[in-house]
Length: 183
Image 1 (cartoon, rainbow, N blue to C red):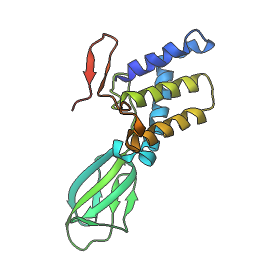
Image 2 (cartoon, rainbow, N blue to C red; image 1 turned 90 degrees about the vertical axis):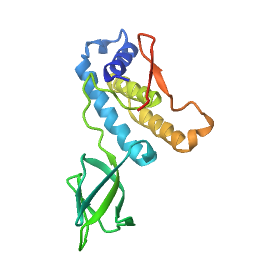
Image 3 (cartoon, rainbow, N blue to C red; image 1 turned 135 degrees about the vertical axis):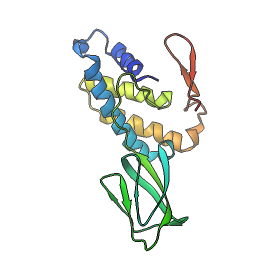
């Protein structure tokens, strides 16, 4: 879903409160805050949702195309590498004496989203971001929404937790036309 629609959903929940003076850009800041928190929790509780893989050649050094919050696995010529270091959240280095094919599994940072960007998340996780925005605007304790995020991610990671509708195939936008998440 478009970030602007997520922010509109949060604004509708804020309603006729004294917090109505918040502009979309204030809410965008809260969206990005929540998105970074959610991304970190995804990396911890459900890394399969955000896993990226990068392959390249190098002599004990590879620069990833994005900054990452977590390195899940490093392989050199299909053998696991144990003693690697991560520099500037983007460069993986380890001892090597010749050029090798290097494969890195990682969790990319969430980055900063603008109003017109797509969230790239399933509908249920977008709802958690709506809740996060509302919690921040209403000055509520975010430990409650953080617990909800962790619970949702654990449920997804545990094989959908007896609920086969946790991850949606798409969503219905405000115009009533179905938009699928197909790639």
